[in-house]
Length: 78
Image 1: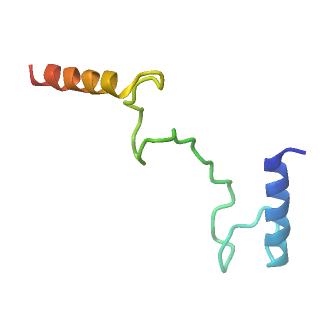
Image 2: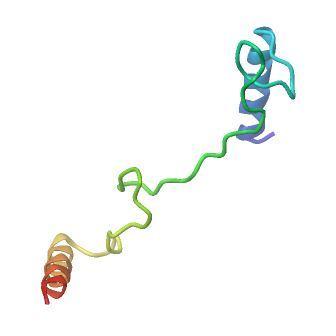
């Protein structure tokens, strides 16, 4: 049994104890959404809302990263 199945089973059991039934919406009058909210993977080290990472490869050292950033800024000014 994988972890996701185990978590879903425990979550469903807890919600059923509070009166929820499969297929019902959440909320006082069951008016809420019935679809599962999908989570998105976020790359470590980048902030919320960023589309792509601007970080260099992890094999680069600090000096190489500073040089790359400096050249990128220089070319933006041209």
